[in-house]
Image (tube, rainbow, N blue to C red):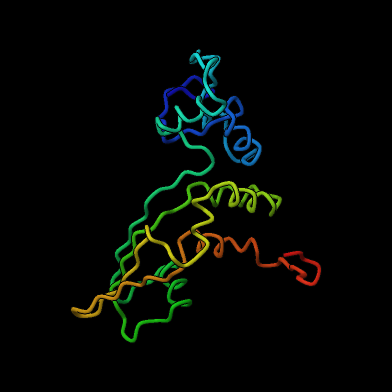
Length: 191
């Protein structure tokens, strides 16, 4: 696919830009984060006939080809030795409890690409909240029932799979400390 700079790029590395219905939100949300090279060239180049199609037809076509709307995901797999830990394993064990013995740790999780770049350029916490609300997949990662992410630890021949665990996305949010100094007054909040 061609990007805004007329360079050939993998569809999975591109996002819909302002020329597309879903892309208008993406460009506004990621303003100052994404470069022009990360957006798909508009239909004025492709010249696809969309006159008799519904509003989201063009967007759906490019999404079907692998172009991203708001979020790009990638798989992250780690196998850690008994005495090895990383930030995510500590994050999980802090919430679900540590095993009795040092164990081998394995996880296969879904990482949110560009999250750190987004946070480092984001001046408004509201933009992160909007991003989460707009992407249903991100909302589902806020609870502990992550069907598509696995985490287990093994000691000897006993392997324990942790079913209810925080997602890698929750770890990314925690690590960024973006909500660290946020105060919410629930007395005035309407539910």
